[in-house]
Amino acid sequence: MMPVLNPNKLSESQLNALAECYEEIANEPLKPLPEMDSDPVRAKIDEAIAYALNLPNFYILRRLLAQEPVISLRRL
View 1 (tube, rainbow, N blue to C red):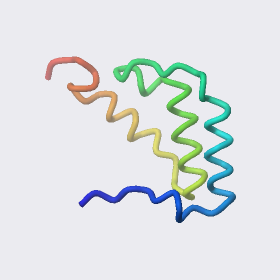
View 2: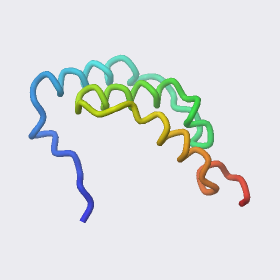
View 3: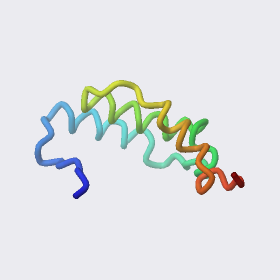
């Protein structure tokens, strides 16, 4: 089992915060996965989710994930 966010359980203010972020970045390109740690669009997505769900900033997770060999395309 993997927990998945149920959008039907979000409050109106949470949905509005996420929708506002979507409107702001909908036409912005994402950098390739190996560059995810320096991608301002991915940062905005993470910030919006953290804000809407009252989570701490999780930039460090994106930074660590970008270093994984499968993502970074680097050998061990």
